[in-house]
Image 1: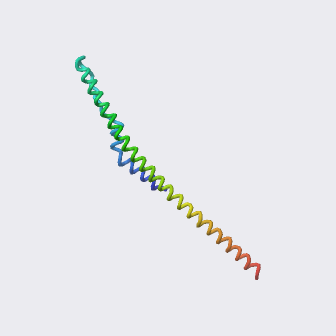
Image 2: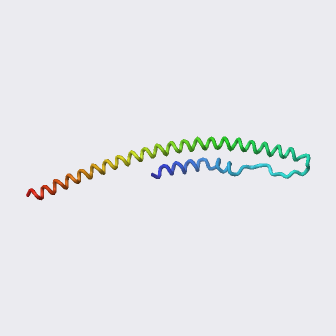
Image 3: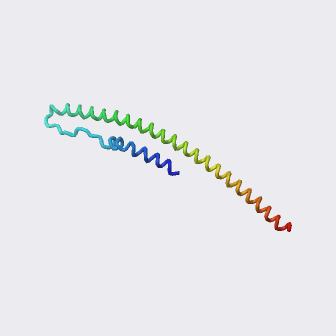
Length: 113
């Protein structure tokens, strides 16, 4: 059951630099010294925000793809666990049936003698 958590941990660790890059974007934060330079600064900041937004959209798409793969692998693991559980349950039923038959044979052997 610990295998899916290892997959999640490896996924997060392998993408840690991307996650940090999304969380800490760097923008121009200079203050305008003159009113003539202010439109240039605003245009630069707008361009940086647009670039950051498109970068975030690309990274979100990549993370969504990875989450989709993770969900698929978790679903596959869940199916495997369910199959193992069903096999274990069948083995337990068979063992219980054999023990009841054995008990019946033992009780019969005691009363026949």
